[in-house]
Length: 171
Image 1 (cartoon, one colour):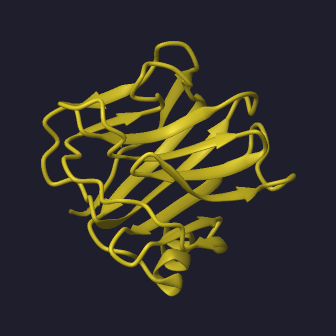
Image 2 (tube, one colour; image 1 turned 120 degrees about the horizontal axis):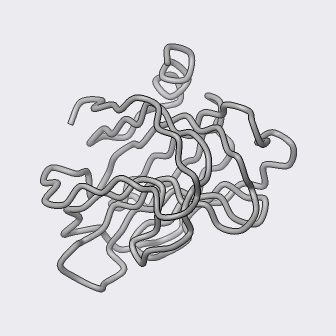
């Protein structure tokens, strides 16, 4: 994958989502996801992207979301990184979210607006079998995102700090 993108979509927080099954080629062991979001609500859990193994109820998944005042990143069913965003994420404000994962080296990063906010070395198993992508909803059918999402991009490698900053500056 080389920076595949989508344009702006407005989600109402109730059964609005995008789902792509049979999405072969999704990054599993390592990768980067990047997108812009402009929320209408920050209450409860709000899921941006969920990449899952469609044929299994296992926890093999990559999930980027907001919950309880934190930007969170889940890999293989494990919360591997979280950052308390305070007033830096607000209703009606465009914010850039970029997350990287490397399950081989147990390294996970969250960048907000081009700035590395958290690095984690939490141990998580690999994400083998990921073949489905859901935007603005959890794989279980809840935690719908409410607001606008723009410029989703996926890479099958980990962007470094300079590359993450460049993605933010050039989007």
